Amino acid sequence: MSRLNRASLASLPREVGRPAYDPASLATGVVHFGPGAFHRAHQADYFDRIAAQDRRWGIAAVSLRSPGTVQGLREQQGCYTRAILDEKPEYRVLAVHNRFFGPGDDAGVRTMLTHTAVRIVMSTVTEKGYCLGGDGTLDFSHADIVHDLANPSQPRSLIGWLALGLSDRRRGGLPPFTPLICDNMASNGRKLRAAVIAFSERLDPELAKWIDGEVRFPCSMVDSITPATDDALRARVAEAIGVEDSIPVVRETYTQWVLEDCLPDDAPDFASAGVVLSGDVADWERAKLRILNGAHSTIAYTGLLMGHQTVADAMADPLLSGFIERMVRHDVIPTVGADFDLQAYATETLQRFRNPLIGHKLSQIAWDGSQKLPYRLLDTIGDSLTSGRSVERLSVPIAAWLAFVQSRAREGIDIVDPLAGQLAEIGKGPETDERLLDLRSVFPETLANDPRFRRPVLAAASALRAGQLGELLQL
Image (cartoon, rainbow, N blue to C red; front, side, top):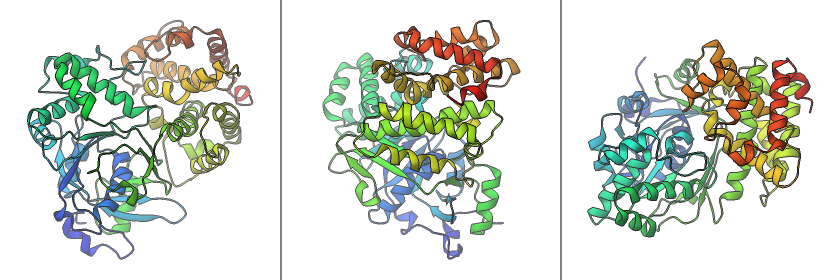
């Protein structure tokens, strides 16, 4: 079977969507760090629509760690399949990526960041990729930040790359690009701005002042459930499109992108592609992080303890799905405070979880728990305590994470987490629950030492060890 590329677009089956532009005609106006499945299924889909009307917004894909996806994009001339699996499957080939940089291509990335046509620098590098500490500020002890401060012209971190690119543009008299974070963290644009400025102050206070005064860092919220690509998807896509695609992506039908309406005048016409421009992203962000992502992490850690493999499998379990619904509606929603119908949003979210065609693996959602828990569950717990509400149900997923770490450590299974070594060491030792709760990079001191939080978490952890998960899920 031949390989998907630009030449094969014309021979695709009639029912397969394809670009409404000539990929060779695209200029490169965007640099994107982290071209994994979510970016290619979500933001790139929006830019595919934008490119149909405006050829300035091709995307340069940059991977700082893994060469696989970038190599696949290069070999397929930026073409890949975006599959939507729902009641009626849909396949569309996207080709909006037109520059490709992997590990070792530092000179090319640096040059790309100074191109005058590049106006947007996006990122999906996961929460851990921003090198932030537990308080949400730049962690100057992080190994990548230590390296980048000592070697600012050879950065390893996204923060270092943004600072270098902005420094080069300032030195060359060019206008700044707009960093656009597309990882879901509370106040993500503001945190990215503070991190880049704090990093720059250590190197060049004048650069930091210029960034502070000239560079916009919009907040954003992105949403579409996107499982990891596997061989089953590759086979399904090859059958549908008639050629081999090594890097397809799959997502659900639902997709949303909310951007803070503070973009420069020369930004892409995001609204024309269906992006919501809002004066305040916080409500959308908080609803997504706490309702969808909080429920996702809860399903992951409790579902794995019950032997489930995917979100849809777990949601088919009435005991677990009933617990998730009660937690979301009675414990999470009261902390969100958004000015739209949160109960309806919750209903839609829970229904999305039940889609059996989206095989979202619980093991994938469980990755990087030390980075995800603060945004997905601990903020909700903190606000609940402030309002005097019980956190008994909300303590269950925290206890399930403690049990997850302990089981992985004692069974010798790798923990995918920036704190993997530390978690494994604690998980194998005594007093695991207490010591994990004392990790200040995960649990803030004011929360961890609050008996209204600590007692129910430790009680739930003890119940899990006693085989009483079923009883906990009836709370």
